[in-house]
Length: 153
Image 1 (cartoon, rainbow, N blue to C red):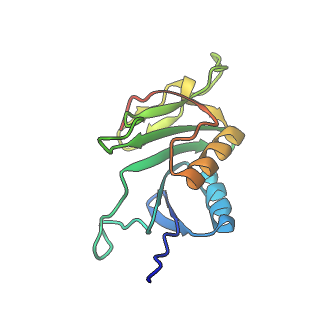
Image 2 (spheres, helix red, strand yellow):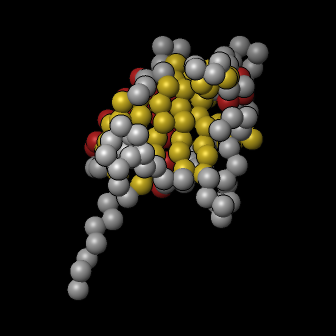
């Protein structure tokens, strides 16, 4: 009988650099790196994601979590997308802050396209930490925060 190891690999793209985590400790460190990086994406899969620069790349799963973090001011915004046709939550969804006020900052979704999250997507950094950690553990859109329809893919 053959046993297959189906260990989960967390891939975080910080800026344009790929970083990987395979253990709980590495994942916790990677989540902190994500929160220190302005723009990042997180994928959870049974193998590392590959860049188009890698042999055999590009290679990504159907779902991803995109994060804009403003660590200096204590805010982050998240976007979740699952492109599988059978995915219940396949539509793009942005984090939602039901306590957002006129002072809640809007964060940039895509600096190359000048696309912005609505201010209502900005959540406190601690909530973002919990949601990203949950995503890394479950591979599913986090339930620890509220969501609203996303504007961008």
